[in-house]
Each structure stands twice: as structure tokens, then as C-alpha cells.
Length: 201
Image (cartoon, rainbow, N blue to C red; front, side):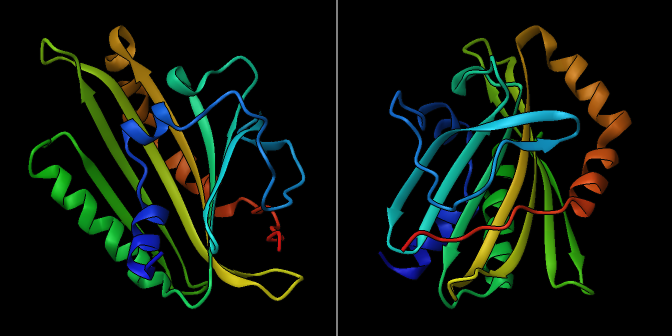
């Protein structure tokens, strides 16, 4: 797979990919992450994983009781190994969001550059509409990007993210709560001790 395709896979998480991703097959822990993952007092267990190419890995974590097509919150962990420029990955995600915003003005995003650590964060909002034109799903994502090196010598970029959703009648309530507390999740994710990954050979 070409490197540019890896960029798109790593940076892209849209409504359709989240809803259709998971199957009933047991998830493989390609990244050897000790779980469950705890964030904001919630415990997330590995629910789905994919290793679509030699240097790309995706894992998703849900709280008990949540389903992939109707989750309230989800933890995302993506890894791409090899010589990949983190600035290019972030820039590509921003370009994707700008393009989506051309046809959906509700979409919004903020990029945070931590020059002290070399990390980046993107906080963005996506929506999907029902046939009547009303918003049926609102999804808020916060992605944290950092370079990594594991104990086996693999190097690359890790994406650790939190995704949260509101559905149908709860959309307005979700957006109101987000407006009041948006910075809280960003700050917690920025300070969160990221899991150590060890890429399977």
C-alpha cells in the first residue's frame, strides 16, 4: 500500500467507517496494549481491531454495554510504522475536515500544536442527517498524535483518540453539554499517560 494511502487511513474516521467497522470476530491485540483502558472514569475494552497493511494497525475500545453502531463513547488507537512525518498526517486530516465543511457548515475543528513535545491534537465535530434533514448523529472527536518507538525498535506515529456521540432527540443536549465542557476532555487527553504499544512482528 502506498504511503499516501496510509496517511488517509490513519487520519480518517468518518461516520460510515465507525458504524460499519466491527464484526463478531474476536479482536486481535496487534499492539500488545495492556487493558482495559481507563479514561475519564470509564473502562474501555478492546472490541475491534484491524491490520489492513504491513505497517498500519487500528484498534477500537468500548465500554461494557455499548455497541459499535450506537456507542456513546469510544477510544481509538491507530499506529502507522515507518518514516512518516507527523506534520503531514495532521495537515492531511485538516484538509479533509476543510473539504467536508464545504458541504456541512456544522463541522468544526481546532488544531493544537504542542511545540514542547512535538505532539498535535485535533478537536473536531461531525454530523449525519436523517432523511428529513434533521441531525440524527453528532460526533465529537479529540485526536492526539505523537511519534513513538517501541521496545522492538519499531518507530512511527500513534493516534490516540476519544470519540463521543449524541443521537436523535439527544443531539441538542449533547451540543449544549459540549459547549459548556469542551475544554475538559481536551485537557485530560493532553495530560493522559498514553498506553505503551509494542507492534507485533
